[in-house]
Image 1 (cartoon, rainbow, N blue to C red):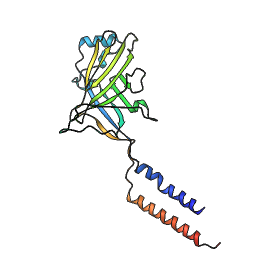
Image 2 (tube, rainbow, N blue to C red):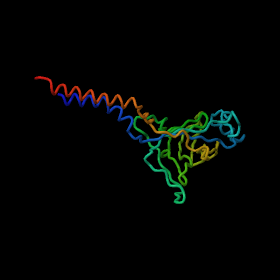
Image 3 (spheres, one colour):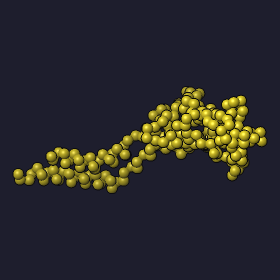
Image 4 (cartoon, rainbow, N blue to C red):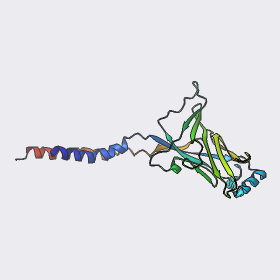
Length: 228
């Protein structure tokens, strides 16, 4: 009975905190950005024919009206990033997989203005992946087929490393093309542990733990020496 009381007290004091503070996160989350290449009048007519509002797709250098391009992902942090020179590995691709208990929209999202794609969509071809070139982020691999907003065309969004495009499958006619930012100032941004690591305990926490251990020892000793 005494040992079970002590064990229960220890578990209440130590294990909830330890499981949060010392558990190594298995994943990391990050964001990426990009932009569209110049969307010409011809491409705008194709977007309109597919049922899109062509004014929502502006070129990358159109200032405040530019189409937002980018997304977020969660990837396995236990996979080492390829080495940088002098031992270069030119290209390495690592898959982004579904995570139990995490929504597909949190695991992977790629958005070009009103077009928002996820890892769990029905038309995904294969699955998303991260590409590295000489140890540096070099874009995303991702392909998905879906029906145009007006239901008249089957479209394919295709990201290949640092570039992406949206085409009609019927004739391979392009609707737009763009790029993923892999520059020194871009690349993967807001890189952090997922789920976020617990904060390092303050000194007061250690003091409370020591006081708790002392109290447990005092109670156990009193019970041991108390008359039967």
